[in-house]
Image 1 (cartoon, rainbow, N blue to C red):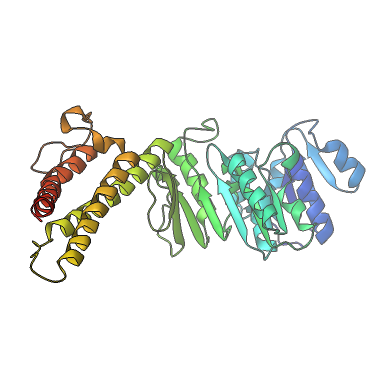
Image 2 (image 1 turned 45 degrees about the vertical axis):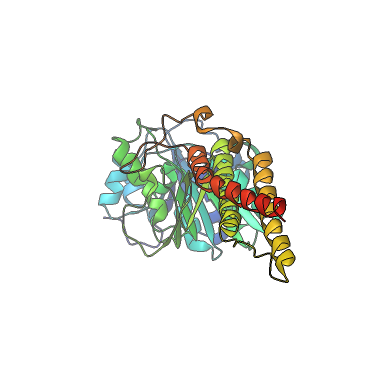
Amino acid sequence: MATELDDRLTVIVGLGDTGLSCVKYFALTGEKVKVVDSRDEPPGLAALKEMYPDVEYELGDFNLETFVTAKQLVVSPGLSIRSDEIEAAKDAGVVITGDIDIFSKQIAAPIIAVTGSNGKSTVVAMLAEILRKAGKNFGLGGNLDGDNFKPALDLIAEGAKDLYLLELSSFQLETTQNLGAAVATILNLSTDHMDRYEGIADYHRAKQKIFTGCKQVVINRDDKESFPLNNSDAAVWDFGFGRAGVNGLGLLEESEHDARRNAEQMAKTIEDIREMLEKVERLEDIDTNLDDWKVQLTRNLTTIENARMEINSAKLKWPLLTQSPGELEIDEGATAPAGGASQSFGQLCLMGLAFTWPLVLLGLAIFAYILLNK
């Protein structure tokens, strides 16, 4: 059982970049800490000695007493919380936490949290650029590499932000109890870190902690592992390949997108032609004995000319319409309509024209007869 004395220490487990950022944070809050690391020469040791010479540290094999009598353990992501010492501390009632958990409790601005097996850094970089272009004052940190690396707790010292953008690993999420992100997403999930987890399901459970307390969820509709396991009142958005739903974003292959657009435009053209031919079909014979027969003739000729121009324009725009059905290439992979043979879109278009062309010829014959017998 952890001691209730006031001199209980917060123990920071691990003296890498994250561990050192925890020391900085607690130094600002006045919290008394001890740092432990199983390595004899951890990477943050020199900085710790220089910046915080009064902070106690233990190196090498862990001292079980240090763990079970701690006020809380702040575990760095590189260390498994299933180690014997951490498990013993947990059984003794010691709080097990991490830098992301602490960070989420200290800031009021919204958090955008991104995790996944692949593509996290790319997506976060894109989001960061969008936020910059939008003129947002945001904090960027978490599990990023290179120049963008910054532990989350270091962001607090930078002052108030409009929002925070965090890339999070499963290791960081293990010690995060209630992230409460404004937006959270698991981009995808594949077998990874199996030296740390018992299997893919165990790994998946760690990733799922990103959704705890979140306001909006973004899922990959092509990867069911990105869906929240627990029912939530959070708004759900989705992304993926193919045509998106109401609350979704999608990517179409350029050829598919162009084909869909062209099909829609061709269908509209065919419909316009049919409307013109229906007007021709409705033309009535002209009685040359009437005083306004010339006016009627002019109107009728204008209707036919408009139809002719519409058809010629369609032929120029859609060369497919100049082919006979026998010249068309049939898409063998197309799905045949229920109860009928497979027909390509172009064939269906030409079938429509085949039904209406005789009306045009009939109209032209009628008016040729009238003019010749005037």
